[in-house]
Image (cartoon, rainbow, N blue to C red):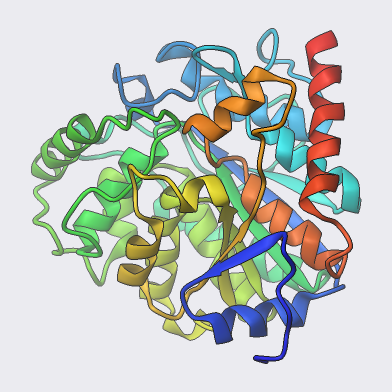
Length: 369
């Protein structure tokens, strides 16, 4: 598939042959978007997450993102999910991609403390405790099993599936799970802020592993146990969905360093899915100087490539959107994966300019609200 041309709106990292093969098989085909929401009390530890105006408000962000995708507005809170400083949720880009393609979308409740006021697939999860307890997630195997069934169900109706997330605090839990599995020995995960609190995250993860009695790498063959001890409730549902769907159709895993842990767990449990899974993310995340998605995914598996959308907000008239170019947000709510999917489903007809124009239209309506 080396003769498959990648449009200017997309870029590739990793195994180019596999990336082109996957993209060629979904080019012009019909996809479905899913976003799994979850809460972990880890997000309320001061300094861990900027996915909310205060640590406490991070618990509202996943529900608000889900409501934005389905309703075009929030019900669980006033306004829209924002970072400190008024930077809008990446769901604005996800909404643009979904609206341009009319792609079906579904919310999966992996386990939330603040419930979205929209219909959701329920996999039997409960919100996660702080990973400092060493007992972060309950019902992991049930959620994994139901997620797998859901992935299988959707793969019978659609040509490809996007699996994504909204779970504040998730890069910290991702780092903990990947260290428990021995995927990484250093902190390579990103942050929704340009000031990535790496030392704080590393310290929390060290304390979490100690509380759970886990040595680095000791759970390489039991990722579900790693999630149970130091993960978050988004993870088991998405691990199951990826495995269930990838048996039949290609899967775009929408997200950045946070979803690397989910891919790592899925590949560890079922290596046969390699070749049918591609990570979909953004240029902002790939170029982030404070994390390393290329090195991270190479550590997960050399044959799970990355496709990223070349979005550029530098010429936007809105400072809240320009902030993405300054290192804020970068990824989330499947904005990269949904954009890659929109370009693929349209066989390259949808461009980054089309996405940006639609983002402006959506953002203007939200500012009016």
